[in-house]
Length: 319
Image 1 (cartoon, rainbow, N blue to C red):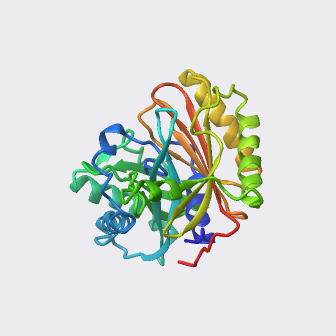
Image 2 (image 1 turned 60 degrees about the vertical axis):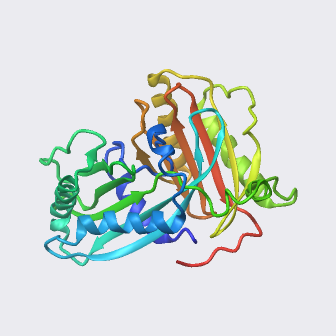
C-alpha cells in the first residue's frame, strides 16, 4: 500500500498536540507479550476488518455526523521484539479524518469516541484526558485482542478553539501470509537484499542519523542486525533493526526526545504510542521516501530501533 499524503495529514494532528503517548499500538508499537500468543493466527485481512470495526464503534453514533476520510491501512513494518531479536510478524495502521463538521465540534467528536469505546469495555492507556483542554487526546486499547487506538484533536485555529478530529487504530502483531507454510517460505520472507538495491543505503543512512541523534551506545551486534528483505502482500521492504545498551527510564526518555527533535527537523511526521515500559515508543513517517522508523523501549531497558523502507523493486499500489 502506498503511504499516502493523507496518512501524513492524520499523523500531523498528533504532532500538533503535546507529546503525550498516543495509545495506538502503532506499529508494534508497544508489543505486549500477553497479546503475542493470541494473535499469531491473525492475518492482514482480519486485522483490517477488526480495525474498521473499532473505528465504526466510535463514529457510527456521533452527532454531528462526520464524513470519514480514510488513510490506510498502511504497513507499519516488522514488529520490534523486546528480546533483542527481530520478529517475523507484521502490523498495520488505519486512520480516518472526521471531516464535514464545524471545527468547533472536533473536541465533542473525540469525547464521543471515548464514550463509545468505554461502553465497549475498552481500557485507557493512560488517565482520561483533562476535558478542560481545548484539544484533547484519547488513548485506549481493546481487550482481549489488544488493538490500540487514539482519538485526536488536531489544531486548526488555536485562537478560535477549532480543530480537526481523527481516529487511528493499529493492530497487534500478526503472522505474514504463508509464514507457516514451510521453512523455505520463512527464508524468502526475511532474506538478504540485492547488493545494488539503493534502498539498502537509504535504510542504513536513516538508521545512522537516528543513532547519531540518540547519542547512546549501540548494543553488541546481534543476530538480528543488518538489512534484510521483508515481503508481504503489499510489496517488498527493506528492514534494518538494532538496539541500544540498557538505559534507565530517564535516559531512554532523553534519547527519544533527542531523536524526535532530529526527526521533526528532517521533515518526518512523528507519533507516540504507550508501551509496557514506562517511556512511550516513537514512530515516524518520512513521506518523501515512504520510510517508517520505530523507536521502542523494552521492559528490559534497551531501546529497539527499526527502519523500514520500500525496496527498489517493490510494486506499491494506491489504496
